[in-house]
Every structure is written in C-alpha cells, then in structure tokens.
Length: 114
Image (cartoon, rainbow, N blue to C red; front, side):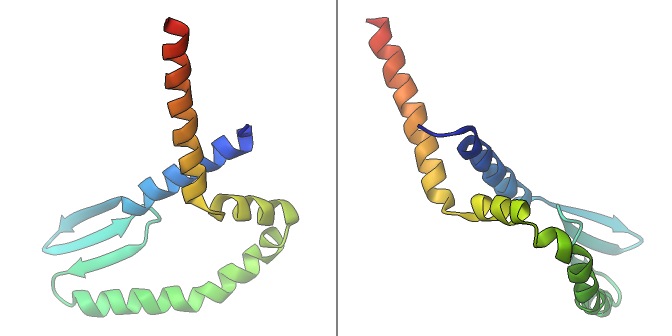
C-alpha cells in the first residue's frame, strides 16, 4: 500500500514538471526577454541581445561556486539528501502506481454499486 510519502513524491514530481514548462516573455523599448519559472533569462532579442545574454550567462557561471558553498551544509544533511533521492527516484513507477490506485478505486466503486 502506498504511503503518504509516495503521494507527496508524486505531487512534487508533477509540480516540477509543470514548473519546467513555464515561460514568460516581455517587451520594453524593442527589447524582448524570455524567462523561466526559476527566473532564468533564456533569451533576449533586440539591439545587442546576444551580447547581453552572453554576459548574463558568464555572470551565472561565476556565481555557481559561491552558491554551492552557501548550500554545502544544507545539501549534506541526511534528511535533505533523503528527500532529494526520493523525489528523483524512478518517477515513472510512482506515476504508474498512482494510476493503478486510481483505477482500483474506480473498480471498487463499480463493485460496490452492484
């Protein structure tokens, strides 16, 4: 029988998938930018758009080591490692189990109806 943790894991995975597909664009004074749900700058069009995007990407690259250092203690915590492993472990089987449960609930409903 699936646990509450399995249910939570499936919800987290659905939210992660939905967030991965979100994009927004805005245009001001002939410059158009595209961002994702994590506030990452994905594209810039307009005068010098490629140069601006390249500079932005280089700044992100430079800051990665600082972010990794700031998160090191938290990321090494066993509870965080466990939660991360759970949410990334075989998402297909969790979704399949959810669908099996939903189908069983429908079957049970019809069996009780007779």
